[in-house]
Amino acid sequence: MTAPSPLPLEGLRVLDLSRVLAGPLCTQYLGDMGAEVIKVEAPEGGDETRGWPVLLRSPEGRRTSSGFLSVNRNKRSIALDMKSPEGRDVVLRLARRADVVVESFAPGVAAKLGIDAATLRALEPRLVYCSISGFGSVGPLAHGKGYDVILQAFSGMLEITGDPGSPPMRSPFSPVDQGTGLHALIGILAALQARERSGTGCSVEASLFDTAAGFLGNFLQTYWETSTEPVKAGVGHSALCPYGIFETADKPIIIGVANDALWQRFCAVAGLGELPDPARFATTAQRVAQRGEVEAIVQAVLRRKPRAHWFTVLDDAGIPVSPVHTLGEFAAHPHSAASGMLTHYDDPHFGALRGVAQPLRFDGRRTPQRRPPPLLGEHSVEVLREAGLDAAAITRLLERGVVLAAAPTPLP
Image (cartoon, rainbow, N blue to C red; front, side, top):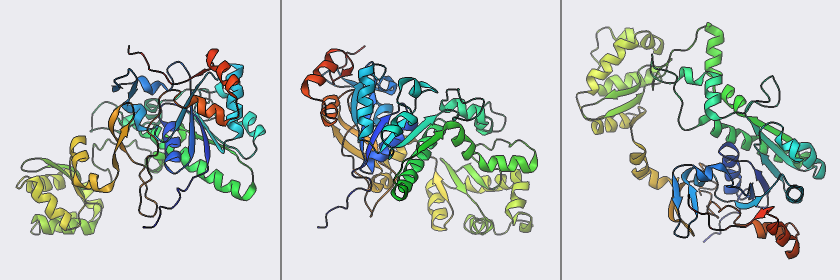
């Protein structure tokens, strides 16, 4: 049997000073691809997502949360008071050994702590230093703190999401946060590639503002061309028809007729070949202009038979179609199991758990989970040893509360 190829980022060292979602997702994916990731957390509770619902409790009194578990595998944790001079010195030690630093402090905090890009890159010129912020470093709102819902509101996303006439509506899976994590990852990988040529690292900036603007490119382009605010389309698409949810004889189904060839196929398999004056609906533009009439025709025919029938018939015809699943139905679907995206693993403290893999394959293989999400300070001592501190120095840091080693967390 051929041995698995080395992971793409094996040997890369990442210092993760971020928390919550965007930064931790970025560094988790770096870890998935083989990087050694050290997560630095405050001793008082660590990353705040550790205490978010839904909480998991272990028999010995430790706790974690579903939110923390979802973005912190393949990392080690050191609990460190970065506000203290001794804690800052530890960060400087770790940065000298790192290839990448990722931080998501509020504006000005990294500089106040003395661990900003200018300081750390002066120590190690090959360092790639990635900053994640709410509004970026340029502009009148550069001081502002950003959360996913804040940028969904600021950018206009809330106003284009939902059904016609509905109030502003948030996309609940935090697309701006997650997208920012992915943009940070893209920037880091590009900076590492550039370092191969130049020998020098660089500063990378990703922000929730930039991500929101980037995601809205198509909407903004249309707004500039028409001077018209977009109309909420629900689950549909303002430029395509029929494209959305329809009721069948038993359960809803979604179809995506994204071009004229698909419309012709749909008419053939749905028995609409005898439509009066079919030329009226021949093009996408015509169907959009007569959306109400088209959707009524489609709805009437789909109600005649159950969802399973229509899924099979439409899928066989190459028409994009899907049941409207619940999360439970999605997780239980045979394709979800076969894909390898939904994983099972044993956590030494919390028992049998499930997770979601990195959405990539390399040479046909998913990246492995080498470590479960860490306890707060689980690896403090070994990280300090690797950084060159002797036993006496480590003991002093522990006794002074600068460093916390993992211990059972009291239940509230």
